[in-house]
Image (cartoon, rainbow, N blue to C red; front, side, top):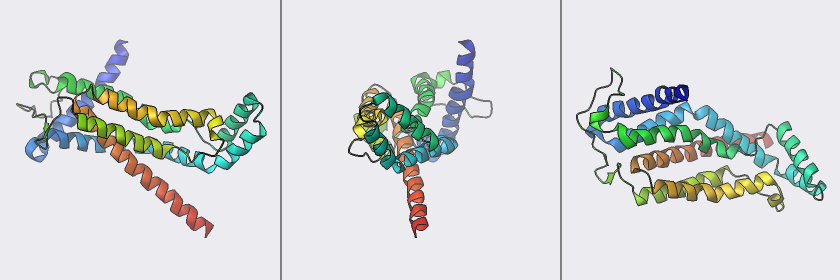
Length: 242
């Protein structure tokens, strides 16, 4: 357990904490919200390969929907064989039916680390985790654009986080065939489409707005990344057909 805590502290908490304080120090007017958005952009850049793999897997799942329907029809009276055939279809095509959840799961350790940052790390009297080359600020202003107090719950940001999570999760779902509801993975994806936004909203209503702002920013970056990747694949497919 001590090793896990050490890895968490030195591998996630301290780098994120120091990165946030460094950005807070160097940006004009020392806006904590802007620092969070910039930190989010850096994190998204580091996670780009993993997110790209997930998005491409979801695109491949959409492409094989006609084959999924054929398997469902062929084994509609035998759920065991249907599941086995679907798993084989996914394997052959290199598709992970649960890959749409991967970007959300990747964020959990980061969210835990940032939660610790906002819970106590931003207290000027508790900045002992700063690296020697990071300037220690005398005070930390928790206001974002002079309007939102990032140290407190913000209902508007919480609602926005829920809405954007719904948009991103919906984008990750493949187009469903008429009988797709018989497929376990399709049912799971459909449930996640509504479960994750609601869960995001409920959690955001209990957390400091700084953490919610991070989620809003990372979701927006994720939506943009997915749009660009899928657009590129669609253009390539259109050119190939021509």
